[in-house]
Length: 251
Image 1 (cartoon, rainbow, N blue to C red):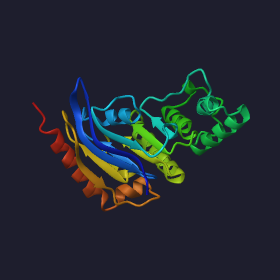
Image 2: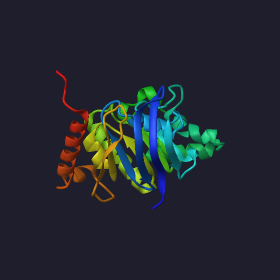
Image 3: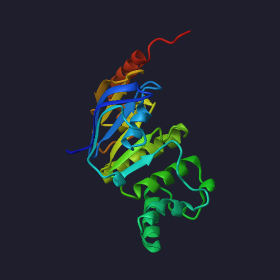
Image 4: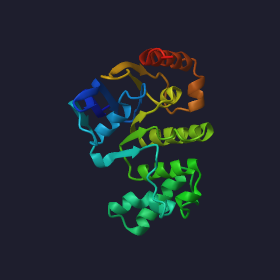
């Protein structure tokens, strides 16, 4: 299976001082890769570099897709408060020159897919936090990205809503065959969603200290995955490795 993203020997930093050094990772088509690690280890910086928002000090990033085929989902959504939910979802299609009827129909189709059928006429202020995240997801996926970059997209949601939207995302990604690079601080979320999880060491000069293959099949149900007898030991190992990377707490 072809790689959508390959990173070799990546070094990132500020003022010439590496925060992150010698990172190698890849994301294959149709696979989800999670990045975890201590705060300040450069997880989000890797995403910014893939998006060309930050220049590397060294190393090479190779993309197997055009940049127009990359979708981005952050903690904060990009919904415009003065546009309806339907118009927000259709915004990218409008920029691509789609006609009104065509982009309206496509936006409505994606609103149905993410569980927002009938809410297209509402404005973002009238949506719950979970509904806004679903709308933001539809806004990204309506453009049919082949590669999705996600930076703590559900961290502000309560546990139940986060679980439901994560499961929705998992199903959508599996059905559409999208590759995903996910940054998260939630270790169980990383393992429940991903095919591979990479652990970054603490900075400065953070690097990939461990790589974990997640031996859970697809299609995947999050609850079933967490109940799998292989999940607990893997989560414990990841927690222990992260604790070792962070080091002792200074009193």
